[in-house]
Image (cartoon, rainbow, N blue to C red; front, side, top):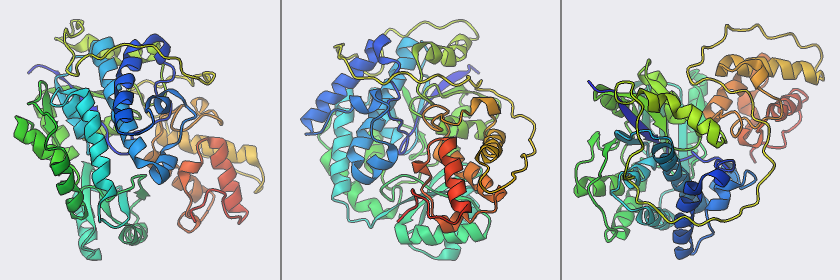
Length: 469
């Protein structure tokens, strides 16, 4: 069987401010793609999306979830489409199969040519109108570190009608959606059972019957948007099969707000169809990490796990390109699935580029567990920092030297919120701190220095500056 390349399109939460900051001067492709989406944003009466992806000082995920979800959604769409074009057109990786996760299914359809780039962006705008009019109660999603069967048993025991397994992500991770009050109860019960529960930065209870009204409204709003059968193979984790025709495209579009994401099954299905190389087309590396846990032994790449430059991008996907066609180097495709867009140069204010931390190979081996050093005295900040550095390194598989105390955990090191939560839980346990009672919003603490300050505040019994109100 021919080994195939599968592209992964992440959904809600896959946003990194300034993700293309270090690429724009040498990649007219970035500028051109974002310019087209900026034009659609103007048509929708919105601010341009390009500054959010070119300036590392742009609003954070936390800020956008709380104050401007529509801007966040368009930024996620723009980042993912741009990432796909870079890897395919600039790096020469052949797109054999496309696989989206949640909102990422709309991006996958756009990348596959079922929607034009402009219409894909318009779809995002109309989706936000439907969400704004939704009658669903305030809610979101919680990730649980257990399988779907155990999660369903937990929901059955809670007997909360509005809670639902929203996404079956891996053998040991699911996401549950529902109203805020029910999710809070779920988190409390999960803690008692020893199940790690992480509240995701998502502003709606997606993949839940609560979104049925919004889904119906959205379907009506996009009925006139031109659609085509995909020119590339798209496996839908919502439909549980490949998207074959325009009717399937419409089913994905109208159903993506309510249908369960069966990512685990989808990865196994495309693997059975020959997918052996998986590349994440979007910020962070959540899906690539999930794939590595579902089908061990495959090659995965997340070139936009953190802010990257041209040289690093090509290095990250070089192995994928070289393995194509039974090891023969690939050539760049003559025609991109997403229609080419005009190239117009613009200048964008940029920060000074921060030093790049040591590169961590994609196939790194986890180091042998370390014994944390002892901490003498509550105020010994340097000792606390070293303990935290070692704990984070052990969990994440990073050499301790790669974890600079002032490096952005997400932007510079590519550590997603779920991993940060697990690492902080271990640090809290090490120092015998009441994690649940503190109700800490970890997204406010973006470096190891900030984590250490937080731990010291908690040890001293002070209310953390970033605590939830």
